[in-house]
Length: 525
Image (cartoon, rainbow, N blue to C red; front, side, top):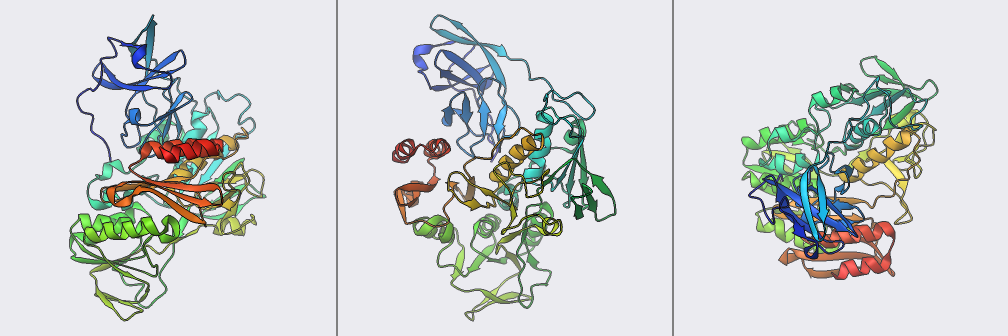
């Protein structure tokens, strides 16, 4: 989904623009020195930053300005208009910050601002002041979204102690959403998949230990033990091992043509199998299953999807969106077999409980995941369908934190204790957990957000709605232009949108402020 930078658009900001063309709260796309630049005004202040999101290249001028920040319309990354700093994932790198000169009613970009001061690495003095005082070593178990962002954040906050990032997957931190989307479809090269090159971790003084799962956690000794016998002591610990795919428990489940998708190696294996195949069966009509189906159709395979559900994603998205998603996939040639489960896997087919036999060169099972809590259980941490954490993401054991797919936290927006299995949530929790590992006392209050891609349609979803009284649809999913609100009584629990990015951003901001009036205005927009 990277966006190529084309010809400069809008005015030359080196020449300047009249403030009359930039009202308070307004944003303007222009260019300077051949680069796209976003000009934004807040009161009497005028800011200029790079206009392209550093995540997937989203157009920031089509996003939303909130106070002195700008939010990307595609996946809700947030950047400071004052410094260009990436303030919340999925954006990890800053955008360029430009200097602005004001002369009367004219605002003119004069050049690039100096890059922010480099943060402390290992052995260097910390700029975080009292934060992290007395914390000599931090171990992060799990090198997925939460763990990788936590490690980066520790350095960005100026922590100069030892940081060890341990991951069972030898691939290290990768862009996991791409594994079922563009990379699997063959439209994203593998060089896009690592979140960072290996050199980045060395430069930041982050010890990256990969392909070595942690097999034991001793909270009393403050030590983790790896499968190869090595151990690491810690002053603070973050558990971010995510979740593991639910495995089939039917005859033939162990056959080599049965695949799951969680890691880069999993995605590579499916690609290799697809290259010599004509027909695939996907078990499960959740997000992973449907994204895999779309990607395999992009590769020209015949794809059948079998699941016990009445409609794809109905339990999460409701009937209107579930019906649309089914029709969308059928338009692209996917054949559904719903209301049934697999009974057995055969060497060249899948047998369903309803008696159907689906020929298959290979099978991809996307039937759910379970939080990886074995370490926490052995260590005696409080569990409840995940690791129980408080609003600061700290577990029942002081000094041990948890973030990502395995963490169940008290969500201030829904008023429930929730666990969410989505990439952006994991990254944002990693950032908050890192700050709290340093004692900064930051509650995790982000509104859950994720996106799901199906062919040329992207669905953005924010909030949390396990149950709802009614679903309110504005617009038509078939027109690729709609807002869907999930309501309980007079409250909006969650909002899904198709190509209404500004509505999604405005709804997110309103949910953050718990401003019901602003939320209703956003939904009506």
